[in-house]
Amino acid sequence: MKYTYYVLPFIKSAVMRIQGYFFIKISEYTLFFYRKMVYN
Image (cartoon, rainbow, N blue to C red):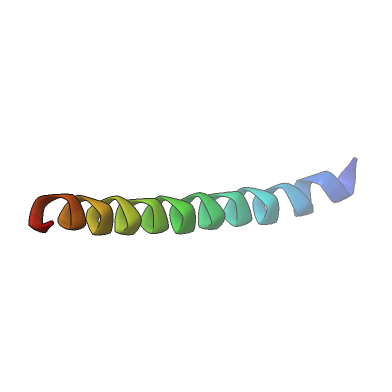
């Protein structure tokens, strides 16, 4: 049980980082496709 207290913050930060990365990537792709649809 002691280890979970040390590990949980690392897991939380890793999950937050991954979620932020995917959110940025998805927004970039949606902007890219939106521009393609508008200009073509």
